Amino acid sequence: MSYIKVVLKSGKDQSMRRYHPWVFSGAIKKIYGQPAEGDIVEVFDNKDEYLGTGHYQIGSIAVRIVSFQQVEINEAFWKSQIKKAYDLRNVQGFIDNPETNAYRLVGAEGDNLPGLIIDMYDDTAVVQMHSIGMYLIKDTVDAILKELFGDALKAIYNKSEGTIPFKADVTPENGYTFGQSEARIALENGLKFRVDWEKGQKTGFFVDQRDNRALLEHYSKGRKVLNMFCYTGGFSFYAMRGGAELVHSVDSSARAIDLTNENVELNFPEDPRHDAFAVDAFKYLDDIKGKYDLIILDPPAFAKHNNVLNNALQGYKKLNAKAFEQIAPGGIIFTFSCSGVVTKENFRKSVFAAAARSGRTVRILNQLTQPADHPVNIYHPEGEYLKGLVLQVE
Ligand code: SAH
Image (cartoon, rainbow, N blue to C red; front, side, top):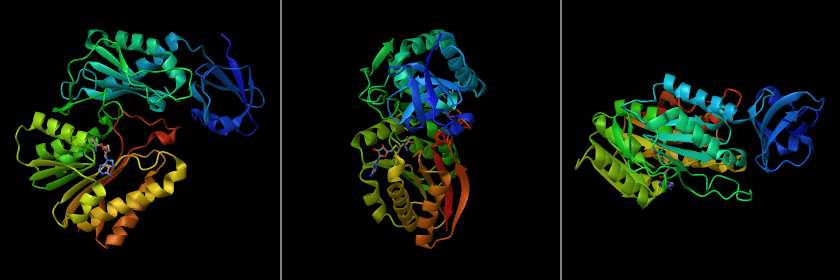
């Protein structure tokens, strides 16, 4: 099998020599032929030395490397890569786990499969492609999943409508590509939640906060908890199980508030400790002086691109400053950033600036990140997108 050859400009091979899986269009000197979007191409340096093989696409990232070895990219290759991801989740205890059946099976670059996300919710796989090359092999991916899980897999839902570049020559539609799933209640550490992969954000639930929610549970006893940006209420029902005195969930989306109420009801029917409000976070935080002693701040990504990084850092500063001003003495703050372009250091600086503005004594108790089913490829630091701090405020 011969693939179209892409040659890099002199000096532009350094990042690939360090196994970074992205080739930017500006690094390319010449393409020998006309690859279609999604085609497999081979990348060489200026002296004709092979560097890697990947999916070609028009855009700032021109090639997403799937192998640094010059092998044929066929069904057997994809199968072995997805099987590695499956085996890792098996080692980590996610497969057939009676307490937790929502987890990330494939996490793109973190599993050396750039452009492919697969989240499992009980017996349903939600597949999301972020590159045309991955979208073109969707039938192969489905066949591999069926083979790996056998009867344990009842449905596959493809949710790539909004994640493929709109100019591409494919027209993905969201929908089932195998079976149809009725059961929409999934489990996380024994707690129930309804997942709506058809209408929900991302693949339906933020599985990446699992470990951080579990930690929150241990901080919650006797506390008055504010879960800001609650979405489906994940942190709220963990706080309730942890023995919180009251839990208030806030999100600007009315639909998120409905989902939160539904999930709390599934776990703690008619529990008077919980209430939920559809309001803007920045407004809500203005008027709660001393009312809460545990506040969770898990906002949406304030920056998706480097050019808006400064605004994002200001946003984190402003948001955290409000929490520092308002939280009761001895309070605990769980604060997060899920923006890939915001580094751990930058996030910490924003929180530092917010703390300094309040003049209160603040200590870092825990430093948080994404869980083990969201592995970070050591050569692709951008994959470490979730960072958080647990703070105590005197
Ligand atoms: N903490 C959640 C995930 C949060 S996702 C979990 O554990 O699952 C971010 C949420 O912030 C979304 O639900 C979105 O509706 C909400 N949001 C965005 N802007 C907001 C604002 N200005 N005020 C309140 N909520 C907001």
